[in-house]
Length: 264
Image (cartoon, rainbow, N blue to C red; front, top):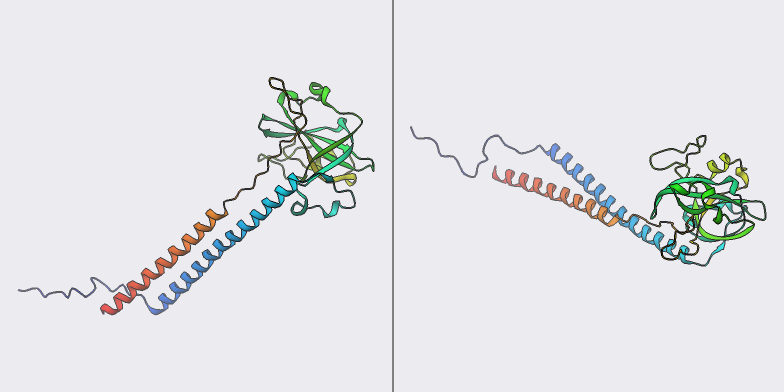
């Protein structure tokens, strides 16, 4: 018995053609996925432009001549967008008895930021981050020679309060453990009137550099790290790449459906 010859152009096995309704659904899903991924890529491009503009503004603020820090009348209008990293100057008297240390990591290793209230002539208070001290300099008695008295002038960078803790740990005011520079929390724990304390703090500029071989005068200021992650181009290329993959998959499915239909 002679077996019938199979037409080489006929599909093998059951037809793989999809119904028109299924094709419509797949097409709509592909269009939605492509549009969504393409929109995400475009959003990242826009974010990149915004980030670059922000970096340029911050660089201008940091290197600009110091201006008077915002006074009480301006405090309600102080925002990160308009004021953070602005180079400012203050004049007043340090309240060393209300000094607070906040856990920190710097180029000098692990230690603390020394946060000291500065009372200005008008009675308002600004919390000043005088700089970094290592673990063995936490006690003010170990750095008594660098505790300015009387009226002083301070320049530095305006920073916005950090109320949410840090290092995956929450501030514990009762135990005196601080992991972020929470202006209001520190002021209240020190017994200061929050209404008279600025809603920002100031990272003091660096003082005189130590001579080679000499230990620095603790606390060491001028250690503000200004860094803005800028991975938006990578993210944009990723989203655009995924959008192209969706388009390629849709084209492949469409081509196969067309081939199958012509073969029948």
